[in-house]
Image (cartoon, rainbow, N blue to C red; front, side, top):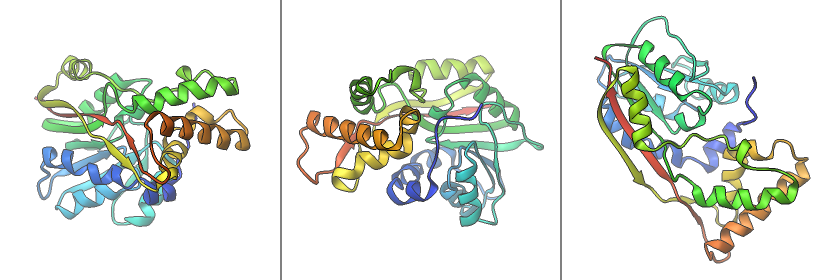
Length: 257
């Protein structure tokens, strides 16, 4: 079934570049070595795949969004990218490592399927390094969305596209599959949404699309404006002041014995 979430690669790169920037932390946990075969799971527009390639890894990237993959191919034609469902993918040859940044929380319907697919794609001794939204992530934004959308006849909860597990929940899934979890942490990372009064609007247009896909375009724009105004009022932000999103991230490093 086609996801309600739609992606705009140009807007993603222009307004939300912090996603790739913050991926450098989990890159350090991965510690890619020259010549290693690495799969970038949920590669988006390919920026971190390119970083991995620059470090000497032999990289392939997959993403569920055909629009994001098309942009990745345009930007980095030397790297093989393909459209795949991260919850049920297969590979022709095992990888030394699977890397994922800011993608696993989009794979809500079958997180165990993601882990099983990662397991199957790794060689024995291979590793899985991932960072994604954890419990408590963007709660303030979700609260504002949930308060506004009923005015438009929409119950936000069933439309919530995100999987934000606790660290215990996710590590249990990894261990159930057979992974040995080497390191895991849940941490707060307040994230500035640049462009002043428009910062949250950019964020909602890209990441919150699933909440609004049943609305006419004019109602969608108004609903996002209402959410933005409510959020800014709740945070007591001055005109032109950048909003801060309450990000909580899980970072894990696990090995396949």
